[in-house]
Image (cartoon, rainbow, N blue to C red; front, top):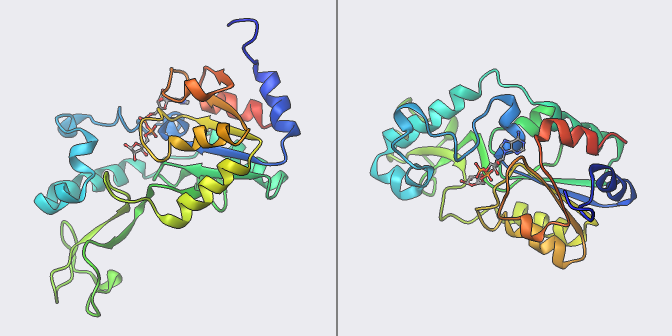
Length: 247
Ligand code: APR
């Protein structure tokens, strides 16, 4: 660590003095809950597929059963998974300091919400939500969809798909707009557990820096966002995030 590398205590002081804090999380914040990170997750029978080959509309239309089975397995693996100390520290800070923190996540695992975080900006949707593949007609009622792999509308054949954002799809406008506004308005942005490989989420850190915020990366490994960081805290989120936010 060079002499001018900000320490954890320096970053805590930045956060303590900040009226507005933005936090961007990725799969790494859930790693210590036992959830494989997005790019580590492909194991077993899915090992031969890259996420980019399954998490697309074209892949779903080509083979709805395979893509539905992949999401069903991801949902099943999350049963019983608990938020970790990093999730809880973020939720507790928000309760101690109402309105001071905006939590933006790329994760679809629901663990921030499970820890008690409210108003989470979910850029990539929610793994446990379903929606229609094609524009729903009057006959398409999601709660009455016929059981299938995937479920479907027995009147028009519309298919049910997971409520996540697939590669190549636009992010939910309201969530992205709020995230960009939070990035521009914050004094400190914590970037926790993301490789920064996916846009536009990864671009939020640069947006924050350009707007004058201090950017802090929390990650045990180097990331694409290190170049825009004022501080890099190399370590696991479940240890570092509670230490950073315990005020
Ligand atoms: N604490 C903090 N970070 C960790 C930990 C940990 N304990 N363990 C791993 N990491 C880091 C890894 O070093 C990596 O940089 O988490 C990051 C996970 O990166 P990815 O697997 O690329 O996941 P993510 O950055 O969230 O991917 C972003 O890409 O594929 C899309 O929609 C998908 O939301 C996902 C998005």
